[in-house]
Amino acid sequence: MIGLINGIMLGFLMKLLEMYSGKQVYQLLLNVDFLPVIGAIPWSEATLFLFHLLVSLIITFSYVYILHTWSIFRWKTYTLAICIITPAILLYFPLSLLSQTEVAHPFDLAAFFLWSLLHLIYAIFLPKAI
Image 1 (cartoon, rainbow, N blue to C red):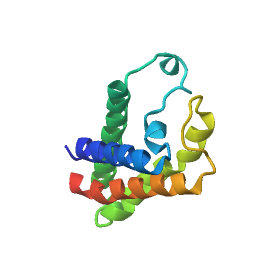
Image 2: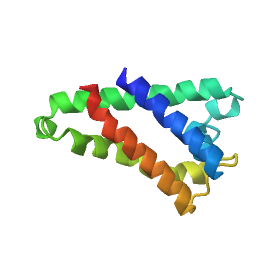
Image 3: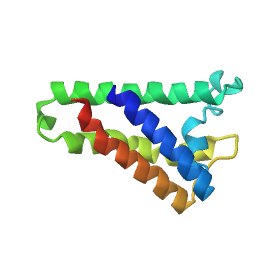
Image 4: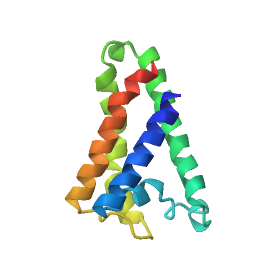
């Protein structure tokens, strides 16, 4: 459940911040146009959001799996959460560069800050999955 709740929270906050800031971070979150085959299909926003939720579930299951199988992280739940979410934060750059539609600019520091902040909030709630 926490994977779905976190994913919904992240998506909702990204959309809200995009509406108020004009920074296209929500559009970036849902963008798949650079992927072969999948990117050529004109998906609805709801379907793209479901893809986002699927990724959130994969992240959550990975987090729980690593936490329960690697004893090094047993008491370092937040450290693991930050380690797991850091690649998602860094995906901002290649995703914005590869996008064929208008999304947040790769060198827009304000957009990157919003993207990073919301993903860190996601990471803070990730330990609730255990």
